[in-house]
Amino acid sequence: MRTRPTLTWEPTGGLLPASTDLTAVVEAVRGGGVVVLSGAGLSTESGIPDYRGEHGSLRRHTPMTYQEFVGAEQARRRYWARSQLGWRAMTRASPNAGHRAVTALAEAGLVTGVITQNVDGLQQSAGARHVIELHGSLSRVTCLGCGRGSDRAELDQRLRAANPGFEAAAERYRAARVNPDGDVELPEEAVREFKVVACSACGHGVLKPDVVFFGENVPIERVAECRQLVGEAAVLLVLGSSLTVMSGLRFVRQASQSGTPVLIVNQGPTRGDRWATERVDLPLGEALPALVEQVRP
Image 1: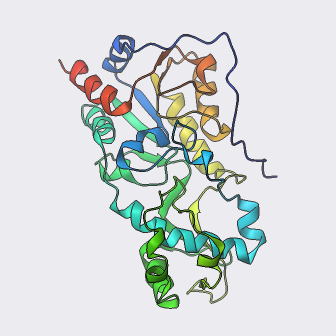
Image 2 (image 1 turned 90 degrees about the vertical axis):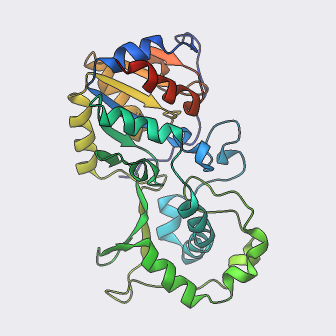
C-alpha cells in the first residue's frame, strides 16, 4: 500500500524556541558519533531550490507523484521532457560550503554517516563516503519492466537522439529554475511532441529515474539501513530539512524515542521540532563552516 504524499504541514505552538547560537551543536558534535540527516536546504546555495523555503519550488510547482508517472504516458512524456533540461542544470551544480563542511566533519571522525533526502549527489561530490541516498539519485535510471539499472547519462544520449530538435526549440526556457526533483517548468506545447524511449535491455519497459517519487515508499532495505545507522548514533544532526515527509521524520522520532539527542539546523520551523533537543535557525553556508572551525581542537 502506497501512502498519500504529504506536501505541506502547519506549525503548531509550544515548540522549543529557535536559537542562532551554535554552542550546543558544537558541544554535541565535538563528542563524535554524529549521524547527519540532510535535506534540500543543504543544496540551495548550489543553485537548487528547496521545496518549502521562502523561495521553495512548491510555491510554483507541484511535483509528480508515482501514481501519475506509472499511470499515464503523457505524464511520463512531460516528466522526461522537463527532466531533459533539468538534468543539464543538475549536472552543472557544484557542492557548496555546507556540503564541504559535512565532509570535513566526517573526515575528522565526528560524523559516522549521512542520510540524505537529496537526489542531486552533491554530498558525494564533496567527498563524503558513507552516504545513504534515502530518496535515490537522479544519476541512475531503472526499468519498471525488467528491473535493469543504467546511468542517466546513457539515457540522456538516447533521448537527445530521439528528440534532435527539442533542446534548440526549448532554448528560451533554459532560464527556468530547476526543481529539487530535477525538472523545470515547461508549457504543454514544448513537451507535446517529445519522444520517450523504452528500456534498451528488454525493449519495452518503462524507464523511471531511480528516485522515490512523492506517493512512493522508500525501499524497506534502505529504511532498515538508515534505522541501524540512527540506532548506533550518539547524536542525530538534521541539516536543511523541513521534515515534512515521514520518510525522514521517522528517524527523528526514532532518535528521540531512544534518548538520542536531536539537533536541528534549518531556516524556519520543521515538522520534527517537537522532538528536538536544540533548534538553530541559521543559513547552512554560514553555520556549518563555523561549526567545523569551532569543533577543531
